[in-house]
Amino acid sequence: CALPIYEAGTYYKTHDHKLGPYQGELSKQREAALQQQRQAEQRKQSEIAARSSAFVKANGVTHFVTVEQLAPNPFVYKGQVVAIYGVFQQMNSATEGLFSSHDRSFVVSGIPTARFTQQRSMVMLAGSVLGNIEIKLPVLGPTLVPHLSFVGSAFCQQQECSEYAINLR
Image 1: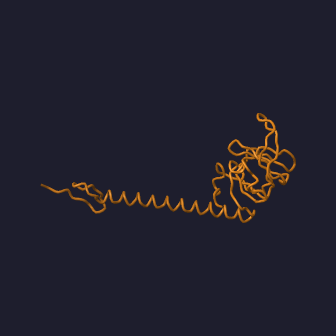
Image 2: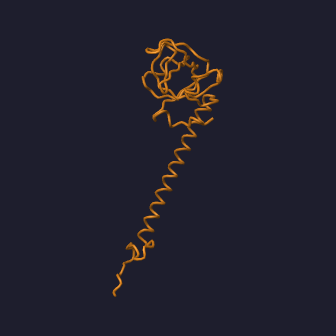
Image 3: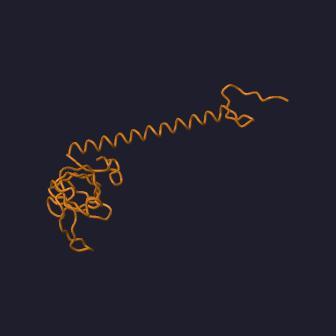
């Protein structure tokens, strides 16, 4: 009974189904790839945290909120600077803009005149909560929506501004 001769560096599967050098090498490669993925995700999360922290510091943000949190009772946050994701719809006047998020609208006043020029721009906004304001929507007619006073903004590249940690504070 002749045994096969293996050259150095040749990978094989053993006859008793134990890990031979070939399977062991694949396992090491898989583990290395998983480790690289974990490190890339950690770097991404660190970048998001740093970007969010810088936005908070630059604008005096006390809370990240969603429009769903703000719309029912904006008075909970009255006078506080909040960060909120929105999609720019239009300027209603030289300094007042209409934004939306998840089919809900909100108004931001005190905007520098040339700040928003591209409809459907995704924006992380910082604004001081004033309360509600009545606006006329095409289908709903007159309706109350949250009203913020502009403090700062950053344009986003990713869907729903996912490059920011919405639940940072």
